[in-house]
Image 1 (tube, one colour):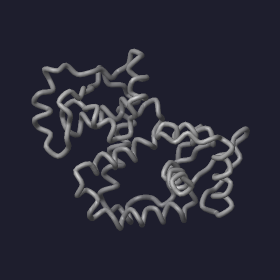
Image 2 (tube, rainbow, N blue to C red):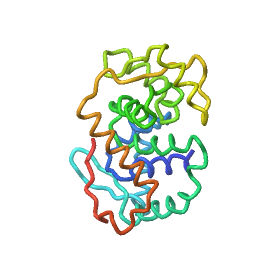
Image 3 (tube, rainbow, N blue to C red):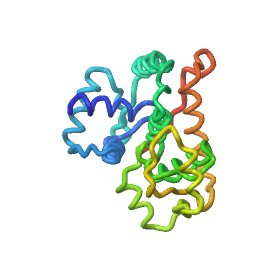
Image 4 (cartoon, helix red, strand yellow):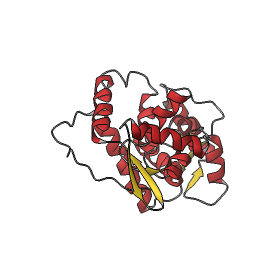
Length: 216
């Protein structure tokens, strides 16, 4: 569990800054419910080892990856890019990593929007699971009126037939956008840009000092 938590923390902090509360929420969304005191201990240990940077933003402490750690993770990513899309589900793994960088409240509409735009069809429940949306999170979201709705069965027969690289259960529901919101489109563009950057070698084109968004 120790190694798993360390790796999850590094993954969550890649490209952004989070407080202990923010990290705790992100971990819970991924099925890791760790006590705040335990999480604080891990963060301080990673800080002492200079794996993380800690900044005081009263009343919180904000954690981020130092530049050297970010570069190391980037190099490891480059080493595996030549083969990482050989698995049909790998595109969903890349999308999941990009969605983890945005606010939890927007992940379902952004996820549905991106999958629907990429594949030109509704997004199935199976695909939401692959991009990191839990059944509980989806149920909670659908309890309230939102911009995502369940697609009509009449639209899904051909969509199921067109999917050959992953298995979609015959009774799997699918979802589509009821309407498009400016904020969802903006975040979706960030996810799609991340997908492109993950696949292409942009060394020498991307600025080394990147602006990051401070999240609570």
